[in-house]
Image (cartoon, rainbow, N blue to C red; front, side, top):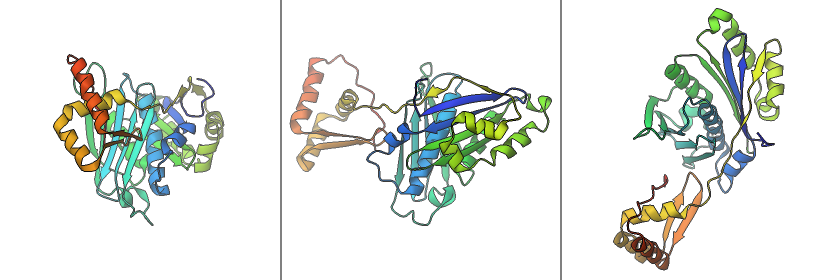
Length: 298
């Protein structure tokens, strides 16, 4: 890894058979927030979910694109995080203005469900998993999900600010009790002493030394997390062609232009009547081309 300040640092407590990871997002988190105006409580929920998504994406046994959605009936109706196998990250929150005085998943998201979708090249359709929301923090929600889905206890500690987002992940492996029956309880108690500002500000080596200085900790090579989702006009043009020219011309006649906002990548696409004519002229010149797959657009 280069000198990036956004990364996943995996580690293993060798003598205890407990694995873990520390995620710290700095410039990537700042890029995700650019031109967004989230209230602090909404921002922090999204940032913590981004950090957890990096843990899950970095631990996938087979490479693929992971999309996580937290949906509910509260003022924060949707949190979406999308991460490619290269750990290229993007995310989006949909919230009403009515979040004042509300804290936690119960108040902000309400009842709802967690959806994880994994898209791998060998699958004809993405694998999807729906589970009810259990817990009142992002950490608790994903602790419950990981413990249930992988049948091994997991612990997550998350923190977020306007400039950084971070997560500490721990998971008990199948032979942990054989190595030390008290190891998991001891390690999770130590991890619970970690303060939010320490998780955000200290380097992974310092965090691990502070928490587990009596344990043997093996560090793996850190993986860089990026946020690189440039404008993609080709996919937008492909999506427009699937809608049909007559419908699009009616939109332009009413509004003077076509406006598409890609919420996940945070881009706006504007097309005039001349732009639309060029899109369909391009299709006529290359009729055999398959329509491009559209992005997730809201």
